[in-house]
Image 1: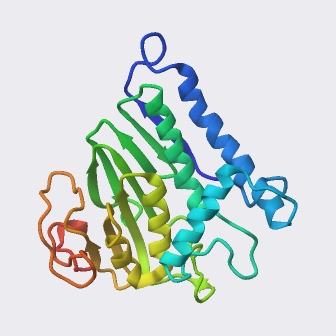
Image 2: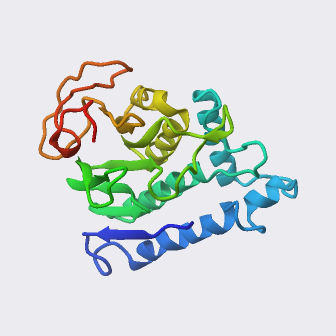
Image 3: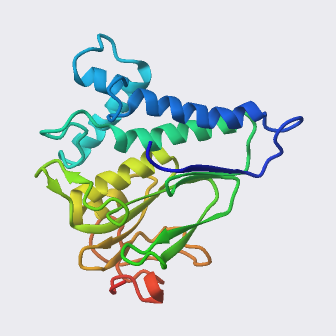
Length: 265
């Protein structure tokens, strides 16, 4: 998949605890997903479907494609797995979807406290767990630290892969946001919503904030911090935040560099 995956499991493993096979199964499943759904492997189901060589789509890929279409419609085309001039690329859904499924397999095997980290996007259970949100322009700084008990955190940004997220409405790289982090009950939602919001540009933070169960922390191209009042900031009680956007507040408490939200990071 092109990113490191790590698992911290605090439950007992082996006799009387979580079976070792369940832990091995997490990584086996992610390798299987990479082989089946990668747009970079000519023999993957995704690539074969794109070439018209798959008469019947598997249930897993159908679920992923349905999610891609759901988000395409919800964003007015900004999020699109079929960009002009490119092959089918459902990666923006596949990552969160597959890691969430891996987490669910751990829970089914009896795991109660774990943190599954896939390239910086996290599914946490049995917390509280602290998750740092990296500064979009300074590698050595955090914008904020979140506290998550049971849920997921995902970030879309330009700092690792440059202008890799394209606004499907224009065909050009999305530039309205420097970074957007979404906290949601599942990584399927958090990761896809973060990517979709980034693709929408400046309006994306408000769009993500309006989605049920989602909390948002974003830095826009003007370097303003935008966040929802319910964002689970470690050591801080959430409060109301006035400002534009559905539920999205400016000046809602501590933000990057201990400056008020809405100030430059």
